[in-house]
Image 1 (cartoon, rainbow, N blue to C red):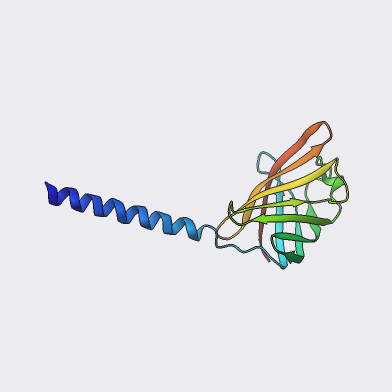
Image 2 (image 1 turned 90 degrees about the vertical axis):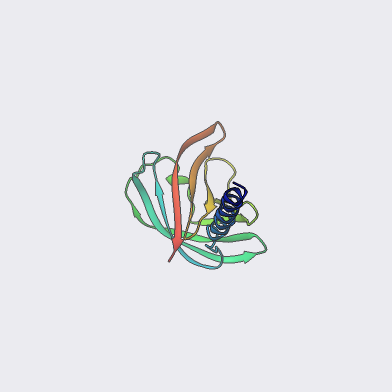
Length: 145
C-alpha cells in the first residue's frame, strides 16, 4: 500500500513538473525588431484584413514602427479609417502580453491590439475605441514574416 502510494506520488510529481516545463515553451515567440505578418478577423472569425507590421525600434519593453495592409477583405469595417500606418506599443514579458496602439497620434477613435505571447505567434483581440466606448472588436494574430 505504501509502495503504491509512493509510486502514485512520484508519478503525479513528474506530471506536474513536465506540465510546468511545457508552459515555459508557450512563451518562446520573441517580438522585437523585424517584419511580421498580421491578420485581423471580425468577431465571427471572418478575415477583415492582413498585412505587414515592421518593428523599427525596440527600447526596453517599448516598440514602434509602421504597418501596411496587403489585403482588405471588408473595406468598411469599423475602425479601419482611423488606422494610420504607424504604431507604438509595449511588451510585458512577465504577463506575456503585447499592447499596440495603431494610431498613436490621436486619443479618440483608435484601434488597439491586445495580444498574448504564444509559442509561435502573438494572438488576441483588437478593439476600436471611441470617446463613447468600444465600437467594434475582433481577433488579431501576428506571426514572424
